[in-house]
Length: 277
Image: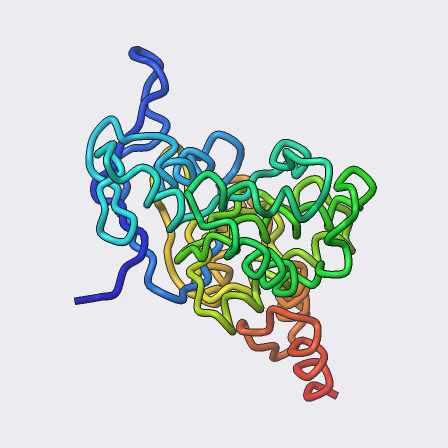
């Protein structure tokens, strides 16, 4: 049996009766240690999926399980929120204290962690995201990328099995996007945390090991970046872009160069071009 941390089975969801389904019969499972990008145009259902995987929403039909716990059962609510932490688009909406250390400790207080255990967990979480030196700073003095790293630290302190990030870099500049994604990528690699990375930045998705594409409330593509992004015409029909290096590869192949379709980052593409000389 696969070691699934997050699992949705035949899930549908409607915000209000008569408005139609935001999700339609979606079945997805995310394995322990997996780094998955979820893509989709606005209204595709990807943010609804995120909130279902965290237990913020309960399915209209079907079941969602976090570490085997059914999100529809109230007795599992706190355990589910601890096991599957969520980071939203705007970091200002997640910061609740006037000092960084207190903000990271907030979730620990909610789940009843003993007070003598909190300082060590707070410091370890801030160290994991490269923000320990800012422990006594006021969050409002930090950059957007630094605020997101504090938000992630607040979840890490609770020792989750999964991180669900709903367009967590959408409001950041390129430097902030890079630093936040790199932190999450490292946490996935070094600590084995399952990551569901919802994004509209194709270059981020290309760095994940799995890509899921949502369209009109359904899961329409699911595979490796190579399997998904080589279907550029299908993606563009859903009003989605492809990673910059994939687009460049398409142009170069159209001009007769033998460029591998697996070239999705700058380094790999540079090597492919050099071989064509």
